Image (cartoon, rainbow over all chains, first blue to last red; front, side, top):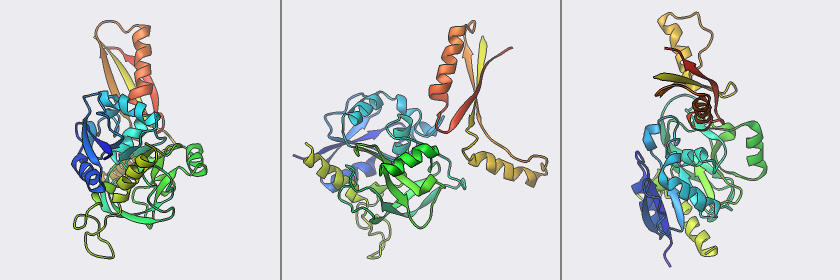
Length: 234
Length: 83
């Protein structure tokens, strides 16, 4: 059985085609999901890609919360379906309260686009199980509203429960609290991060690696992890 | 027609990068009287007819649940603006 992984398109989503490509390169079937149709099309997992849904009006990710498909996604996530939010997708996951905290403008106000080193802090989630805890990976980062904030109590809770999934290494590019780049829910099926693993899945198009220019494919493991999670928990 | 005005501000403990940038730019134009700037949002909700207590309560609910994100923002005021 080939896993079916849905990729959601909201008005203003930019990275849906890259996310679908990553799904396909990982060995699953990408399924396009459209914000206006409350139909998950029998997918096994869902990716909320990056971009500027609804132009980031009000707050990044805020209006997507009220799209017809979003309620279905929230129900599926609460039922245990693997859901990954990348960049704007992460912002949507915080706005629908599947993940705690929020993102505000980068501390220095600049839009950042760079190859970013991350440490995988939690390799037990549905989207990270094929990494090793403590492993450093390089994936592109590109955003303006990437500063992760939450109150101290929430941050302490995330740390204590091992729910910080990724941390920035070497340089904190946006002022995120405690260098947090991505987090998971308690169950490990909902993961959100600001950097873009879907842009590091194919030789020649990824970040520079020690091996060769543009050769980095560290992001592909997100998608193969989801597939192996689905095989382990059918 | 009446207007309900909602003011939303970043929480005091949250750094406000936009306000900080504006604050840093003001002295460059000779406005050096101000110690700091914080930037928020103003929403104007127009109502056909009278603003009843019920309508005002709904405006408060909208302010708390949609117009602001309580993780990073406070609703400072929800008030009827007299024309």
